[in-house]
Amino acid sequence: MKRKLFLLGLLSFLFVNGQVVRLIDLPAPIKAISNTATVLFSGETATTLDEDPPANDECDGAIQLTVNSDLECPTVTTATITGATDSGIPAEAGTADDDVWFSFVATNEMHKITLDNFSGDNDDMVMEVMTGDCSDPTLVAYVDDPNALTFGGLEVDNTYYIRIYSYTDSPQTTTFDICLGTPPPAPANDECDTPTQLTVNTDYLCGTVTAGTLQSATDSGIEGDLGDADDDVWFSFTATSETHKIELSNIEAGNWSGFDIVMELLEGDCSTIIESDYPESMIVSGLTP
Image (cartoon, rainbow, N blue to C red; front, side, top):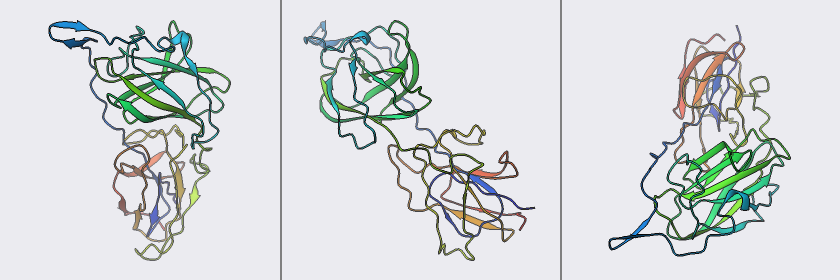
């Protein structure tokens, strides 16, 4: 019986059998939510920042962002949370006592927000993407540091809102640039039925390797054993031995620290997991050449 292999990420294969391997990046920990008071203290008197609120202090005053056609960000918008106040909408992380608002019309099913060029108190920011009406918006995605967020499942031509605030529980004086970019299309091997065929090397020297990427990959809808397979890509191979070694090399991480990529080896119709782990190499045995 022949088997297929599927992998997520950059792969270097030594011995490979007919099996399936999938890779998944593990989520980073989320900071605890704080419910502390939203004031600054001077002596014994509680005070707020003595600044006029920015024009986009509330959702109905959101600044319209330009949607860049790529991730190079030729067009950015400079903004500040200095003087911003609490909009009264519960926060997913941190304390939204200095939130400001932006809006955009989606031109793609996936976009990326990047914050850069910080000045002021700190750059520990929370970003939330919302849809619906300003009076009762619905959360689409959020991130609490790093200051970049890629999110999908959008409806083209639909208006979305972005809320940004500092994680800390006191108002801050931070200025930043915000870019709304558009990732490239999903890779060709985004689904199990369109895997990239791997070359099986005759030894462990990996004379032939195959490059891969998770950028713009989407969830294939196949449940994994580890991590969250929301950006899986697929590879296949035909076993030439009962044992093969799968190795990842030259890994370049974007906005997340570390190389927590999950590899899964599957067979059949991509529903049977034989092996699942998050090393940079994996030896699998019991294969059928």
